[in-house]
Image 1 (cartoon, rainbow, N blue to C red):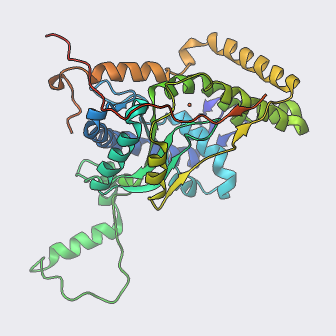
Image 2 (tube, rainbow, N blue to C red):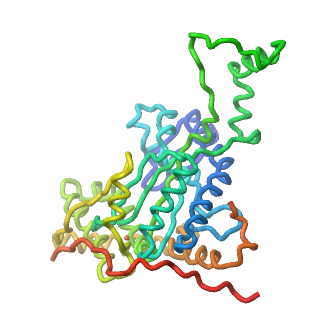
Length: 375
């Protein structure tokens, strides 16, 4: 399916029921195009966060130091699917859906467990210093199924004349009338006393869009690669379609599969979790997402069926390698390697019962970067 000649859009495969009218599709494309123009400024902002915490070993996943940060902008078709699936919740109001999109721009960092909490504190301090607004700040490291830190930030970024929203305002009749009125005054600086009338505040809306920032450890990124398929299986609605009223047992089995992926690993959990709890709760929008204390063992038949489904889905994906996502771990490894290059070569100046994991007994020693390669 995809985009049709009349400008409408329809999903493919299991998402064929998703659709956008020509007008809705045009609005989504315009929203995405503004994100393309905004991306360099947001990339620079997040490179600044990581640069401020480089001494703690924080790495921006997907950043090779040159050009765009990989996957820092949601793809157009991914955005279409997200918007189309949410339209019923907003009574078909496309602008309301777009106004609530918080992950058009998304970034991930990775920091070794010993320095993770200090790096999270440093990221918050840096963004506060840049006058960014936190819309969300959650951590789920105590959750047995999905672990990590997640923030949604609305940046304060200076707008320049090349911003497409600036050009759009140049065509706005209210802006045009105000500009002409001011230009016609003998003394443009003589604005007179404030008028007790309606005040219209205009701002470059394109830079009022938040971005998502996930904070991981390198070990958690390895688990996240494996978590992706069962996580998406749960979200897809396929279990409900396949098993009907019994779907809950299969969703519990999927939770168990995901929680089991964290077992036996000592490279996932950050040190100083109590300190991370305190940081999170100190923020107005902060939440510690504990989740259940444990994940009970599922029904054996449900667990066996879920594993069969996952094996089948993986086999199907392996037949379509060009459509598979890049691994989070490989993106991290490339970024970590790039972070060790001499600064002059870089362009970014500016995861029975499964118990909850506990933090490893690791002293919070500072990260020592690997020596730069001989030149």
